[in-house]
Amino acid sequence: MRQLRDVHDRLRAEVAAEAARSWEVALGLHADPEYAFAEHRAAALLTGELERRGFAVERGVSEMPTAFTARSGHGRPAVALLLEYDALPGLGHACGHNLIAAAGLGAALALHAVLGGSAGCVMAVGTPAEEGGGGKVLEVADGVFDAVDAALMFHPGVYNWTRAPLTAQVQYRVAFHGRAAHPTGDPTEGIDALGALIELFNTLNLLGRRLPEASHIQGIITEGGTATNIVPDYAEGLFGLRAATTQAVEDLTSQLRTCAEGVALATGTRVQTERATLRYEHFRDSGVLSDRFAGHLSRAGITLTPPVPGVYLGSSDIGNVSARVPAIHPFVAIMDDGADHTPEFAAAAASPRAAEVLAAVSQALACTAADVLLSADLRQEAWTQHRHA
Image (cartoon, helix red, strand yellow):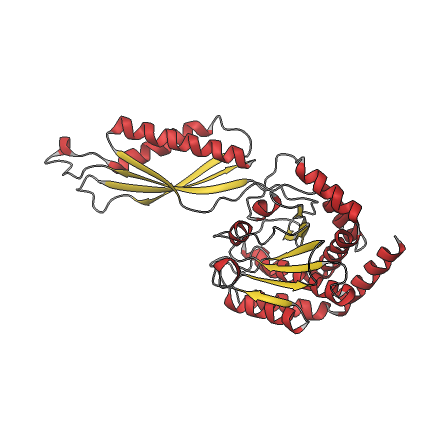
């Protein structure tokens, strides 16, 4: 225990010594937002920092030009620190991914400086397109996390919560095919594809009244005809499905298909339903590792509490990682009210409070990673919890 406490002290000192540079990285990402799968300058900045400090960097992993892994040490045990760096179109870093990247970077560099690869493998994983695309989904499928014992990250927010109540989500495209006709001159020959799509919206509205907590379907019309004097022969909608668990979102998918097929039968149209995005699984928290992180963070005067029951904060591809390895995704507040994905939150992600949170979180991530690397008992407990989740 004394040895571990000494490592913690050295890690905190290393993070503090590099805090100014970590904040420069966070501000640099914030000032230069890039979007899903096109985060070229962000990836170059982060890999450059890691490579200069002695990490073995692999770029373009999982066939994504802006994804990367950077390793210090080899073999097992192994800890992955996840770096997100995509922004939101029109809002920039209104989800604070500049802080997620800088925190993972700072923690990884501190671990390399203190442990030097002697305790196993520290891996910084660059994960593009969390906001739309799912870089982690592709990395999981490609085996990036197959030899990892824990995946660690944090997310800035408006709450101080030990874990993230994140739902499963997927999007589906539903297209109805009808028959064009003149609505006055030849109305009986028309089969109204747009009318069928609207009827699907009505049916889903009724379905929504009896869905369980956290489940919903939100849709938009993406194509609905070209002229008012033509019965539309084609109409298309895009539907976002969310549910508390991955199985529940699969059940919701079946209900969407059933509703669409029923509407097609009733209206004489033909329907096609196809998945439009990768599926984000629900987040499975590693309670023992989240508790470790919360304990380390409390040294900075930040107290984390469990999330408020019944409150859900969207979805993330960290869910897919958490289905494979023990993972944490705490929320740490950088503002006290409002919400992310707003201009106010984007401003908060470059504020003095954000700089303080970045330093504190980087220390807590580094210390939690060291706990995983240096404690076989902790690793065993985390894996036991994970297998029974």
